Image 1 (cartoon, chains in turn blue, green):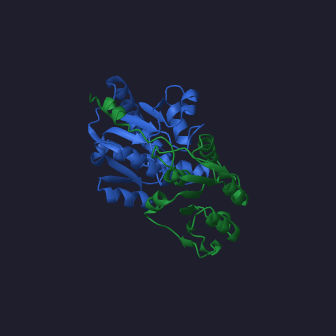
Image 2 (cartoon, one colour):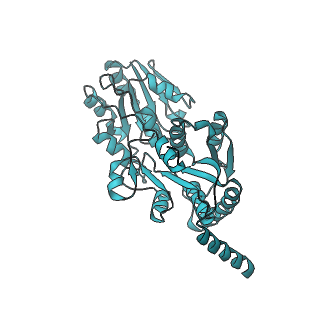
Image 3 (tube, chains in turn orange, green):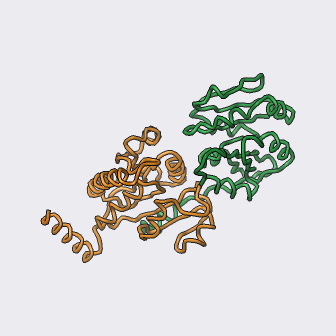
Length: 187
Length: 164
């Protein structure tokens, strides 16, 4: 146990000294589920490199998987980090399981960029690249549905300053959360 | 003219489906909506068929159906609202959207979006299915505003990737 802790600590020190680990892998967009997936696919559809972007979807999220399949982009799976209305303790365990899987996937892929728009799975994926000190660029887009307050994932990512760019879709949020960007509607 | 009613897929909004009653249908007909389609999801039992009203549970091409509609009566889910919004920049023929709030739902953070869009005249907010008839009368001569088209984040991505 102590050995693992020691090597973990060493890894953190190495990361801090080396200003992070090079990340030259793919650009990855996380498909949150339901409305989040819909918004993400809308955002991706407006990009030149739309077909080169790879996806992460939840194992249980058949809607996102079938949509990703239809587009033909490469995609990876992660277990769901939290179910809607799930209790705190069981969701903590589930998130931890998701985090471990995300860490393994991120070590393997070393994405050069993550594009996320919530909910929990995307926050966990961002945690993973930051814990690994990967030099992944993180773009977080808050949902169109959020006019006055950030979502839970949005608040976490904002407060811990985990994103390189934090985009909101309503000017009300811009005033409330300095450092975010508003460029108009994105979906 | 065509009217489509969206009741939502995950949580069935039976009160909205039931609100498409003979009184509402006859008013819709009088306003010129003679082709009315109701998406009832899992709540088929709440649906009243009528000469001018057809129903369906789900449709993968829901956007195409909405595109053809002149009036959308929808639940307050962000996805359905987004699908319904007119982005054409043409305010003369702008689609009318009535967003009906499910007043039985406790958690209503979705209201925040509907209220905002109501203040921009992009939608008209109906506080309860009970007020549908009244709201249809009230909005009969109202003009709606299209929502501005979406912007691409290509330049954000390029600048982060170091592409000029």
